[in-house]
Amino acid sequence: ELKLIRYESSEVKTHVVDRTFFDEDTGHRWVIDYKTSEPGSKETVKSFIHRERRNHEHQLSVYADLVKALHPNENMPVRQAIYLIAIQEFVECLA
Image (cartoon, rainbow, N blue to C red; front, side, top):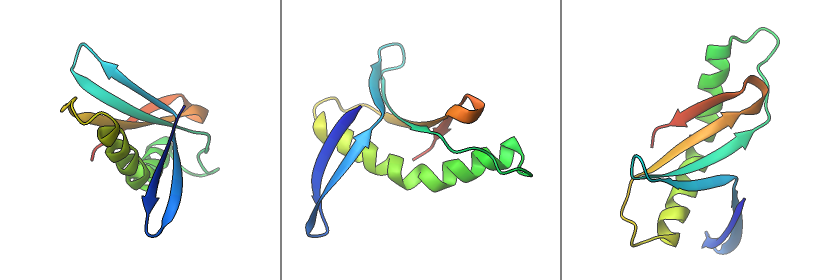
């Protein structure tokens, strides 16, 4: 975990990035957030993934901005993803 703090809208906000790393093979930095949510009883896996991606895109975008600010000289793409623990699915979220 990486705890980051910044001043937003006249208040101090704390953000916790579950995982971030640099992938030497691709030249990208990754920001990953683990999610413990589960699909609804009548929800398909596809719709569950779509819902979770939509629900967390903004949060991941904020995390990516924070990580970029932490490493201003890296000048590399930051890829974002959620890991859905209940279905063991890695889902990239496009910025």
